[in-house]
Amino acid sequence: MTGKPIQQVQDERSPEWMAVPGVVGTGIGELDGRPCIRVFVAEKTPDIEDRIPDQADGHPVVIEQTGEFRTLGP
Image (cartoon, rainbow, N blue to C red; front, side):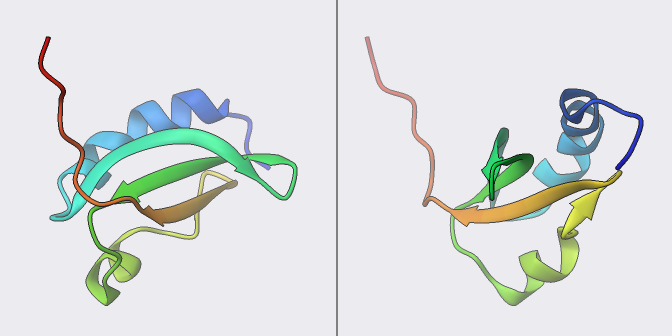
């Protein structure tokens, strides 16, 4: 495991991941009872799977297909 807190890793890596076409967000979740970084994608594709690592600084990374995110009006 890394010495960096998971929130710091997410903050540092999110700009790089958000630049990948199809990535719509990132967050912190849980995987097998451990914290993980979740990368939300409109559609899970081989290109995205190649560009997003399975772990970052010792923290697991999970790609989750969510579709597009939209803001709701007032």
